[in-house]
Image (tube, rainbow, N blue to C red):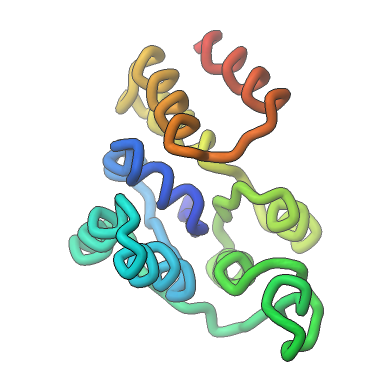
Length: 175
């Protein structure tokens, strides 16, 4: 199993102190160059926490930055009126989907539109919480640590509906 991560899992795991769980997954982890630019380059420019840590994981080879050979067109609603429209996602999500297709691996996207498009394209897709569950299942996180990590991610500003938060909390409390 290999994983292609979008910006949100990288941002919130790094901000919450949970990026180290990637080491426990024993799988190849990719992110497209567009996502690296958003998280690390733009993150540093804006002084965002976690940008340097993500870059360190790239430099150590834990995360491989790889651009897809195939490009998906972007939606003009997201990318600006000068581009043609096929997919209503930003460049990073489009590249996550393209790379997951190319490598035949799982995409990690939290945004609903990107997840829906992944399913339409036949790509296995999960979100940030999936990484916490994998780390728990691998023994890298105890039940209490998994629950605490989820709460830290939310505290860092990860957007989630009340309904989804409640459902995830119930699932995590049953570990």
